[in-house]
Image 1 (spheres, one colour):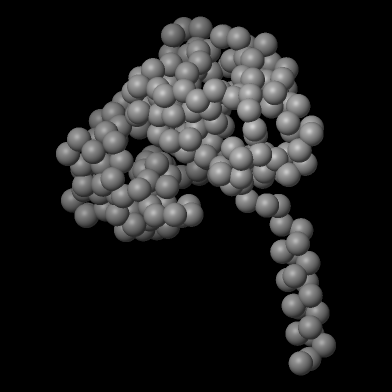
Image 2 (image 1 turned 30 degrees about the vertical axis):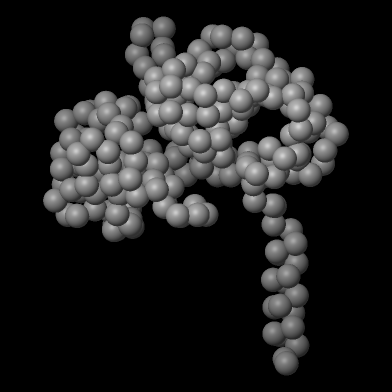
Amino acid sequence: MKVRDKKHMQSEKQAKKQTAPKFSPEAFLTSLGPGHTKIACRPRQSIFRQGGACDSIYFIESGKVRLSVVSEQGKEAVIAVLDQGNFVGESCLLGMPAHLASATALTSTTVYRIGKKHMIRVLDEQPALSRLFTAFLLERNQQIEEDLVDQLFNSSEKRLARILLRLARFGKEGAMEVVMPKISQELLAAQVGTTRPRINYFMNKFRKLGFIEYNGDIKVHPGLLNVVLHD
């Protein structure tokens, strides 16, 4: 084997060692131990409200959660739609006295409520759990950066396609959720940053092209990725 090849293999091994661990919901819940409460939420049920006491962090075991803010003028903006394996309310760990946004269950959802003091204690006492949580924060930060780039440079059509693929968990470990519960076009418009008529136009276009099917529930096909990749 050439010296060059050996150096290349060594650099690859070193890069793998330096890569942060991927977040594992199962490992997180196992490491957490007692001190958390499991809550079953109905669709449209509030998990926490903007301005409410920020004293707990929530882990989404299943379902989907809408994160939104309302301005002083009463205008609502949807920040994100989060699914299983995500946290909401993590700003409590920074000492925020009140929630800056509201979290609402979009579908039948199960969350774990973890008190701020308990979460801080286990992160301090368990390095393995702390590394898992750090991995989650790194993934969330990357997603926020991608969302910002998407909002600044991509068309409404591409942003909608990307959101639908994300809601279907495209590219994540495990099977893609081809069929998703009904999501209103108003909600999609708030996420994309456009009007409901534009969302309706794009949804009909995607359906005619065979990228999605919807009659109540939404069925997403991998071919929708072509919209995101097309220049």
